[in-house]
Amino acid sequence: MSITEDATRGHRPDEVLTRNRALFEPALRAAVEGLPPAVSSVAAYHFGWRDQNGAPDDAVSGKAIRPALALLAAEAVGAPPSSALPGAVAVELVHNFSLLHDDVMDGDTTRRHRPTAWVVFGADAAILTGNALLTLALDVLAASGHAAARDGLRMLSAAVLALINGQRADLDFEHRRDVALEECVRMAEGKTSALLGCACAIGAAFGGGGDRVEPLGEFGRSFGTAFQHVDDLLGIWGSPHITGKPVYSDLRSRKKSLPVVAALNSDTPAGRELADLYLRDGELSEAEVARAARLVDAAGGRGWSQNQADTLLERALDALHSIDPVPGPARELGALARFAVHRTH
Image (cartoon, rainbow, N blue to C red):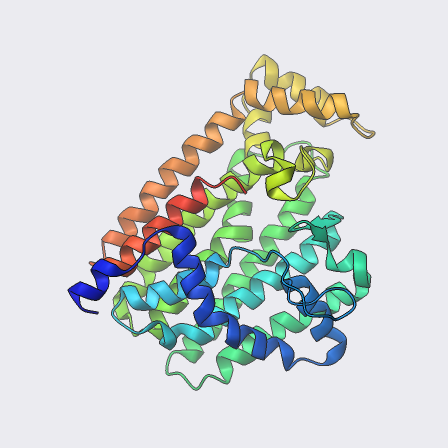
C-alpha cells in the first residue's frame, strides 16, 4: 500500500466494517447458499438476507467484527485482505453457529429486532442449522487450498472447543450460588475472547504473518474479554431500542455475568443484598429486576467491568503495536477495538 492510499483510507469504524463486509459477504452468501435447502433457508433468515417465507429481505445484520478482524490482520502483516477470505468466512460462520444455539439455550425470542430463528422455525431447525454452519466453517478452510489451512483448522477447532466450554460454564453458573470472579473471567475468555483471538490469528496466518500471528491473537483475546465486559453491561443497562433486547434481560435469566459476579463477590452491603435477592428461588418481579440492577451498580460491579474493559483495551493495543504493523490496517484494528469497547449496542 502506498502512502497516498493509506492517507485516503477511511478509519471510521462504520466505514471499516462496511468496506470489509463488501469483501467477505459475497463469499459468505455463496457458502451458505450451498447448504441443503432445509438449513440454508433458516440460515438466510438468521443472517437477515431473507424473511421467514424465503423472500429477499434487507434486515439489520450483525456488526461482522470477527471477519473484519481477520481481513485487517492479514493486511497488518503486509498481505492483501483477500488472502484471509477463507478465515474471515469461517469465523463468521462459527460465530453464527454459536448465536443460533445460544438463542435456543437462553430462550431469547428476539435478535436484531426480529424474532429469533428458533421462534420462527423451531428449536430443532435452529440447532441443526447451527451445526451446519459449524461444519461449513471447517469445510471452507479445508477447501481453500491455502498453505495455512491446516494451522487455521487447528486454530478454529481450538477456539470452538473454548467457546463451547465457556458457554457450558455460563449455563452452569445460572444454577450455582458460589461463582468466583476468576472462573467467571475464564468463562468469558472462552465464550468470547477465544473466537476474536482466532479471527486475528487466522487472518495473520493466512497473510503469512509468521511470528506476528501470536501477538495479533493476543490483541484479539484481550479485546475479546473487554468486548464481553461491555456486552454484559449492555445486557443489564443497554437500551432495548438500540440493543433489540428487553431491558435487564440478563438479570431476568439470573445470568452470572461479569458485573453481577463482581458485585456478588464484593463483600459489600449492596452485594449481600443482591445475593439475597438474586440467589433465591422463584421468578423476579419487574421491580425486583430493577432493584437488582441498582444493587449491581452500588456494589461496584458496573464500575469494575467498565474499568476492566478499558484496561484490557490498552493491553490489546499494546500487543497490536508490538508487531510493527502496516499503519493503515493497524489504525483500523485499533478503531474497531475502541468502537466495540465503547459501543452502545
